[in-house]
Image (tube, rainbow, N blue to C red):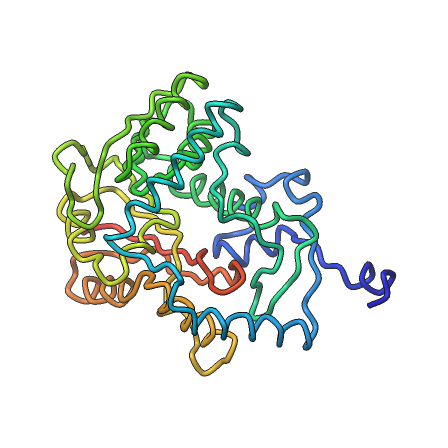
Length: 317
């Protein structure tokens, strides 16, 4: 391609895009997102040849029997991954960059039913941060306590602390390095985030979790690891009756399998054994009056092979 034509076809993320991605009103989005937050968020749509090449990469992945799958037996991988982040933080201190998980590294992404090439490698990370800020601002105004399940490196909790310095925060994860990272965040920032060792598969550690009707629950790319084994965790949430539950996860039910682009994502989702049946189960609970679904929204944004930024917000009745 001609560099000049590349420049001419560059697109920029706008407040309208974030309104579309979040499914929330422009008044909410514009109250959170500043012009500087959007600077440099530019991308090029891929052409047909480039799209075909991505499709071939996916076919190779789907044939690869060594691809890691989510599940209860994957705990050791998270132990190693978050230990790597812990060592990075010990050397470089607490920051958004040192806490960044290793999987934010792609410039080929999904947007509105097609592939794009971001002009910078921090594009996905920045969109993720903005979507979180919009959701937190909209839903946590009258919340006194937020519990993040599957809190990983603690980056989301640090963002919450900066937005709501007086809010009580709890981070739950099933591996020790994650809990140590929370300890370091507390030491460096003066936050008082409570770390709890909790297993979302077995519910081990449940006795240490205190959920009230002023508590919000959040999962961000965490329930994806449960596959179809989310039932005990979901039932625990319903029985504990939090004020609201927010999930930013890959939701397989949101794809349109009549479209090749979406079917590719479904095949990848299943290959990785990601969250399956969760939204359908919520709808079942809604039908019998156990819960209210406040928001269910496909953002249209994702990493190369799937969309992990679908939004579901609900509460027990």
